[in-house]
Amino acid sequence: MPLALGLAVILLPGPSGAWIYPEHRDILAQALGDLPADQQELFARLWADARLGSESRYCATMVEGDLRSAPTCIDLASWAGIAGDHSCSPELLLNTTLPSDWVLKVAGVSAETKVRLEKAKTREAKQNAAAVNNLKLQFVDREYTTRAGANNGHFLTTRTSDDPKEYLARTLGATAEPNALGLYLYYHLGALGLARQWAEAADPTARAELARKVLATEAFALHFLEDTFAAGHVAGSWGGVAERKGTHDYYSELGIDTGAWNGTLFTLLGDGYMRPEDLTRTARVVAMSLGQIFEATRDGTPSAEAASDVSHTATGEAAVFNSCTATKQATSTLTAKTAVVALSVAKETPIPGRGENDVHVPHFRQEIGPFVGFSGDLTGGLEFGGFQSGTGNPRWWGGAEVEFRVGIGLEALTASTGAGQAFLGVGFSYDGAQYGGAQPAIENAGAPVVPARQGLTFRLRIPFYIIPFDLLLAAPILSWAAPDAMVNMGIVAASGGLIPWQQAFITPFGAFQFLLGREVGVTLFGYFGNRVEGVGLAAPGATVPYPSDLVFLSYRVLSFDFPTFEYRPLRSFATNLALTFAVQLGWGVEFPNQVRYVSKLTLPAATGPVPDLGTAWQIYLRIHFDARYYF
Image 1 (spheres, rainbow, N blue to C red):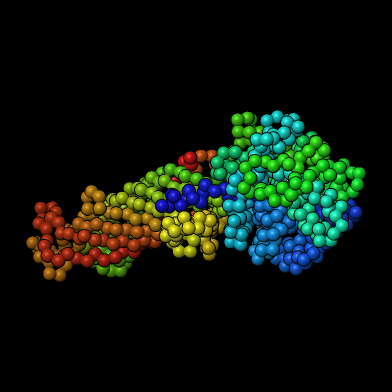
Image 2 (cartoon, rainbow, N blue to C red):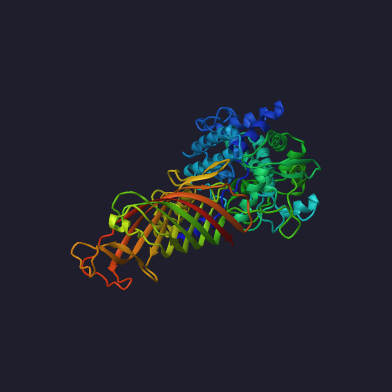
C-alpha cells in the first residue's frame, strides 16, 4: 500500500512554472514602468476598461505597491504570475481564478515569499523559503502542483541546429508539443488580434469585455515569454519527472551560460534566484511585447496589419486555449503576416539546449520515483526496566542492522534534502548483551540482564497528512471517490503534513527533520530460529530442581523503535544512485513474551509459573547509511 500510494503521488509532475509569482510580477511591473508615456497611457485605458464591474478585486492602478505585504486587490502586474501557474487559460483566469476567494491568499503567500527570499543570504535559507512557499501555495491553491500535468509547456523545445528559422518551425510545427516559446507566440498573436478589435469597438460594454480578454491573453503570453528566460527551462527537458525536475532545479540555482538568437551572450539563473540583471533583461523583452500590443491599436503599423490578419475565430480560440491539458501546440493565430511580427520578439529569447540524443549539458535528478536500496545502521543507547531489572539503573546497549529496502522518493515539494521518502525495509538485526541494573542475584552471577540476540527487522516509513499512517486509511476510499483529494493529501504529507512540523529545516550544516510518526521499525527477536536464552529469577511458586533462585529462561522479544529527530548532511544533485548518511535520535519499547524455563549446563529446567519479564523502554542514537538506486 505505501508503494502504491507513493506512485499515485509521484507519477504526477511537480510544480512546473519557471519564475515564481513575485518574480513574474516584478518583471511585468518593471516592463510596464519602462514603457514610453504614450504606451503607458494606452495600457491605463485598457486597465480602466477591464476594471468595469470588478473595481473591488482589480486594483486602481496597474502596479499597486511592491508586493512586500499581502495585497487587498490584484493589479495588472500580478496577472503574469497568476497565469499559467494558477490558471490554465485566459478565460479561466478571468472567470474562475481572479474572482475566487483564494487568489488573494496566493498573492499573500507570494508577498511572504518575496520578503523571505530578500532576507535569505545563504543557499540553505533560499531552499527553506522555496519549500515554505510551495507548501503554502499547495494549501491555498489545491491544484497548484497538479495543474500542468499534460505537457512541458513551461519549457523551451530543445534545438537540433543553430538555425532560428528551423527552430521556429520545430516550435510551431504540426507535431510540436506545447512549449514556452510556442505558447507565447500563440497567445501574443491572439492578444494582438483582440487589441485591434478593442481599438475598433465603440460600445463601452464590448470594449470592457475585449479589454479583459486582451490583458488576460497577453498575460498568458508574457508568463511563457518570461519562462523562456529561466535557466532551468533553457537547459532541456526530457526524461522522467525526476530527471526533469532535478535538471531544472540544478540550473535554476547554479545558472547556465547561453545567449539569444540575435547573438547577444549572457548567463541566466532561474526560479527563486532571479538577479537584477535577469530582471532587467527579461523586462526589456516583455516591454517589446507590450509595445506590439500598443502598435496593434495604431493604424498603419506592422503590428496593426498583423493583428488584422488574425481572424475572430482564432482570437476566440486563443482566449480559451488550455495550456495545462493541451498535448499539441496551437498555431491558429500564426499567419504569414503575424510570423514577421513574432520573429522580432522570438530572436530576443535564449537559445535552448540540445536534445537527449545530441551533445547537451549534463542532466541531474531529484529523488523522485521508485527505488531499491541497502542500508546499514549502528545504534547505541540506554534501556530502562524490563527483564527483571531491580535497581532502576539504565543499561547501555548497542546493535547493528543491515536492511534491503524498496520505496518511492517523494521529493516533489520538499526541497533538495532527500527527506521525502516512503519505503518498506526488511533486514537483520544484532544486539549485544546488556549488563548492570539487574536483580542482585543476576548481577552477582555476572550474567547479562539481556543476552546478545539476533532478529528479523521490518521498517516502514511513510509521510502522513495529520496523524501517522492516515494516508493508508484514506487511500482505499479517496483513490476512487476523490483522487484529486488523495493526490493533494499525498503532496502535503510529503512536504511536512497539514501542520508542517515535519518539514525538513535546511542549514549550512545539513537538514534537520522531526520524524515522530513517520517511521517505525519492528524487530522480532527469537521468532525465527533460536529463541533468546538468558538467566533470570524463578517466579513465586515455581519448582527449581537445584539449590538456587537463578533459572535459565528462553523467550521472544517484540521490539518497536520510533526515530524522532533526524539530521542529514545536505545531498548534492545526483543521477540514478543516491547515497545518504544520517544521524537519528529516537526511542523504543520492548515486550518480552512466551517465557519458558529451559535446561542448561546439565541442569534440568525449572517448572511451574514463569516470571513476568516486564516492559523495557529505550532511547537511542543511530548512525545510518544507505544507498538507493532509482529506476
